[in-house]
Amino acid sequence: MQNYYTSKIILITGGAQGIGRGLAQAFALEKAQVVITDLDWEAGADAMAWLRKQNLLVDFMPCDVSKEEQVQQLMNKVRQQYGKLDVLINNAGIASPTRKPLAQLKVEEFDQVLAVNLRGPFLCSKYALPLLEKGTNPTILNMTSTRAFMSEPDTFGYTAAKGGLEALTHSLAVSLGPQRIRVNAISPGWIETGLWQKEGQKVEPHHSQEDKEQHPVGRVGTPEDIAEAALFLCSDKAGFITGQSLTIDGGMTVKMVYHE
Image 1 (cartoon, rainbow, N blue to C red):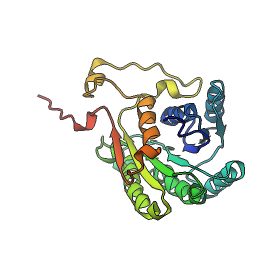
Image 2: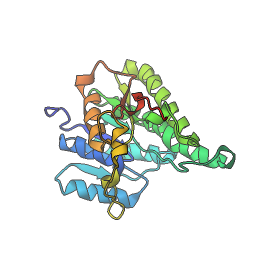
Image 3: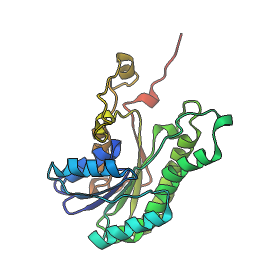
Image 4: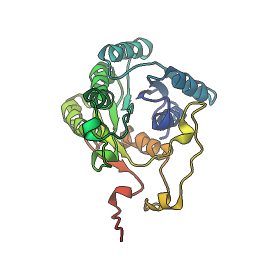
């Protein structure tokens, strides 16, 4: 991005593992100061050590984004240390319980998924606002999912939360437009994150030919695929884009599948 991100402050929630770790590396490679936050202290320390070995600028601030007080404390730390925020990436999310029949799904289980995946981005956006207003061409990027538009059976909480986050994206874009804050979303499909976990939980990916052929591009996605799009959407090259959701799924959601 031709040094666009040099000296920019980037906050990535859920940045310790998976797509979040890929995003952290990508922005740091562009000379940004990256702050990752995560509920998993071990994963956060692991990610920070891994990135610093690459001589990248990264800081770790633990936080449970579903808790209002913790989000307030997080933004206070960012303010004290950096004074501003240029990019907020709402990436933190949980899927558990991944699948449960409706009759067996507990209300508190449903609520917890919504608390992290939907209330978390709301809280982070709310309390990051004063910092973003001090940033340069500030942007918010929400990480949704193709599950917002299509479902497997018994994925109620995750699907509902991601659908809500899609709607929150355009609501924030309209509401924060007068402050010149752009808000967009990325909707990932099947992204392989096995090698982007903390030590001890890394998994060497293996995909069958059938897995690959589900995607018109012929492969499963990677965190780098998401990061490249994020770098564009959060830059001034995307200055006329707001309130939009970019699906990155290798074409999987537009491929019709018939079974004889």
